[in-house]
Image (cartoon, rainbow, N blue to C red):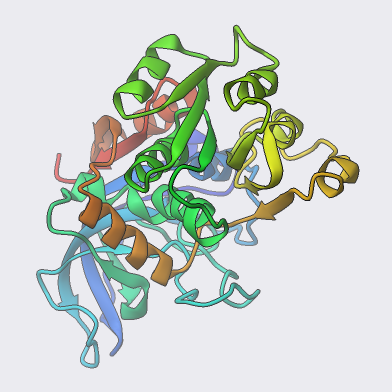
Length: 338
């Protein structure tokens, strides 16, 4: 069996293909033949050494993958051979509120992930995927889609007609756009590319802002909302955008902090939150139950995940570099059947 391995901070050139011996299954374990893997910004951070993990041993990277159940342990009941499944980002957070124990490890970080021809996982980590999604599409759900779902519908209390601000056109933001429109929400989205903004309008975006030509984009958000601001921001930018996101948020609104594409430093003035009763909520992907709800919502709404580019298994480094370039719109996928 072939699998990629990467050391924390080993950089993209350190992503190398290895032969891995498959071990016998424990009673509650499942062997999954991986068909597709999708990349997240986190995978670049692991490669560059900018992600907080405790494991110095080379690991199989990538949290997000989908495949077919090949074999099951003697006591497995959740899945059967032939089932189409994806793995939850956190293998020990099944439901309920997060705890330190539940989020102590995540696939492709502290423990082996999905960038392998086959993976062995506990049955409780797996979720069946909607039949209408291809393996490539199903592979995009565990991190980006769950994060968008959590930010919009678990950590926020949105109603039809409310307004959401999305930053950029990466996986979380595009899933946020698709889910928000399916739920009857208004969407404002930013990008530095007019071509990408045109594509977001095709997906239903109500208003678009080019942050290169409109650097004070928070003022434009206020103008577009008649001075009110948005009800929720999916804040993926970090130190370069957080204060603008706060300024663009309505009284009583929620700034859902997700990532740090521009870094994790910066300062927030508490007065900007207190005097307008705004909430700053940090989320970290979500539980297996959230993946189940996300998959059910996407299946029920007929949402087709947006895939920017697909690379064959042998070109995993090229897939990483494409994500690093920022040229993608939606998700970058590695197809293990190619």
